[in-house]
Length: 377
Ligand code: GMT
Image (cartoon, rainbow, N blue to C red; front, top):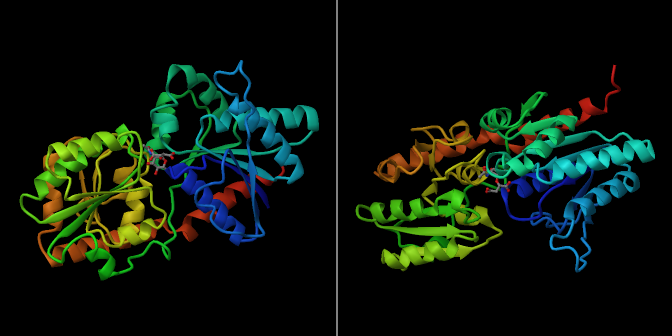
């Protein structure tokens, strides 16, 4: 098949999922054409089956807001024809679904070409951004006009039905992970560069947006170190980073909290962590938590969105109410109570991640593409 994938090129979850999906489809022999405004961050190697088409937006003094969506629509129309795409898979509804639907109609009306469009919803496109009254009508229309819509968790599917007027079935296809790449790689020298043998390592990775509630990570850490010697490693960058640095300074934690910034080899860092903390306000799936579990790191998270579909309370980690840092502190200390307890949680975390192996989930997308290619009865 010739498959077009539209995504954000950044380190954010939807871009990562789209890129990893495309890479595996290419390994299986499909030709995969990425369409984005920059080279996707995880598109980090050459393959004869992988192609990248850049969307460039021309500026003009009149444009306070350069028309990215139109440039994207034009690029989709072009790539569908030149690469003879069989299907177009767009990740994140805004503005990708709307651009894809406009391109689909142009191709049908002007070029006589039919291109099936699959829209995959990732989370904030529905829960934070999408239900803004300015977008709601366009998002509902674009989803209803898509040939198939998928959501990365049952919770996100239900939220979509709640916030939008959707008249079609939304299929749940959870996110996935490459279990060979994401597995614990013990490296004591690397670990000792961050913490002594007596200290545990707590970790959080994110794009440092408000929705991640990183201040809760800091409050949990400051409570945990009263009982257990620990270091906290924060990976990623974003708008909240400065506030969090200031909070650490205020609480006198600057020497125990390490800010790593954006990192590529996240599996190496996760491999030295003992517990992963994700206290998000909302989280449709929590790919970062899955990456941690695959590396054998138990997860403390909130009971929001799709997280309870991913983390099993008392098995692969613990789940608490949003903002309940006392409960999260208690659960975390419970995991770290003894070497035996930590070893059990570690092993359970990895075991739980096995359900989301890339080789189990990617065929679900492939069979969805195939259904859309069948002639309509
Ligand atoms: O909020 C982010 O972390 C980025 C955002 C994205 O689309 O890039 O993540 C969303 O999609 C990820 C991949 O499906 C999910 O794992 C995240 O849970 C989801 N984020 C939220 O719902 C806040």
